[in-house]
Length: 419
Length: 166
Image 1 (tube, rainbow over the protein chains, first blue to last red):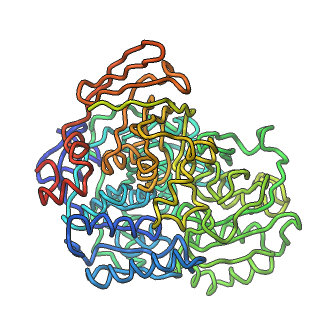
Image 2 (cartoon, rainbow over the protein chains, first blue to last red):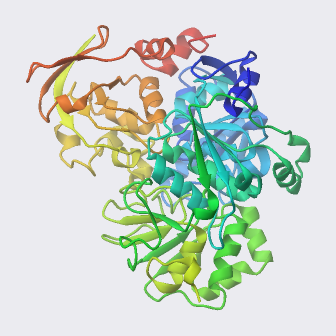
């Protein structure tokens, strides 16, 4: 039987051929928690086990959501996670190392792996061809302890993307366009599987962005093929031996195939307060909306390439005096690279604030909380009411290029019109 | 097992940020305190007025967003007997079962705010005692039923030292 990518990976991990709809037990190759979910994971695990990890070398605790800690309660949570990492011999990613999904991509994710994480954006790993999905603390505690999980093999919607991206249009715009079209529950419980010429040509950092947002359409995972681009990416982090080719079988069964012409996509914006509330940047509903804060960051869009795009448009300019700009590099490695390339200096000249690699701004914990009635354009993945720490504020989502244009003009602006 | 209480109506797309806001991130290791704020950004009176056994009655895609299991934990801790909705987001649904909070897919348009509701989990029925309407809901997959009946996944693993299916 020809298999989708999801069926193929789960079959390997279940040790038998499986097809969509079956409930199976599958081996887990890697598990992650972060400081928002890790303390509860540890407390749940302690209800049924001593502090033990089945696969400590691929169990990773990330201190990234409150980094550095803004409150004593969170400092104590960090202490608990450090202690658990030490006792179990699992991996600890310290304050300042960066966002869990970025570090997983740099150091751990392998094509064909089955990964679980106590963070909904664990689906980012699909960008490297891993069946990688978010779960809650108890499920991840079980996976850490037993080295396996139960899951329903998802049905697959295949997205076939042809054509090429126009100038100033990025994979973030593709992701927003697709979520707008499918709806926030349009891919509930499904695997989103990506293919076609525009995906073959897409570099890994942009694939990670698309896979990262699979959960915003309700999907369990967002799977990209593993190809030569994947091999080059892994090789750039000294991990070429982790590479293997992986793709769906021709003739695999899909619940639906969606054809997209990348050439038709323009810069897109998700309006408050849902990610599927998507319009084109030139829509009357967003044209001229004044923006108080621009945020270039998150596991969606603050890799080195994103910073290059932002600086490419803002170099030599000053931010609009009304608009604050916060930049949070996705990881220590990204921040160092940006420093080495002189990009941090350009950002500071532009008037940006640069914060510690982590998640705090995006998730409303600290460092960029909005005031009452304020509006933010963020390159992150969620704009729910209260997401950035204030239920009386408004979040728009867009690409790093749209963020750059908006920071220059102080209103939601089209990157194709930057002069 | 019967659960009886009043309906608290909520709209479509109630996210985990509505249920367990990020601005209260520091309360994640203090769930009794966190539960005093559950859903307050949607209905400020909810946490202080919800009674033991009451139902959250949502619309489409209830619980979308983050994987934070604190969301169903504090709903349960506030005394809610079950969450009823037209549909649920995937991670929330699984988390709720894992912490022993019943989640029921049904037509919630047939209930109004304040209606007295009775849910029979064994029979799979929702009875609206206020307007007399009765509907049945689909059974959970076997694995989830076992977890729910064992008061959650942690307790199940403690008792069996394994996952519900092998």
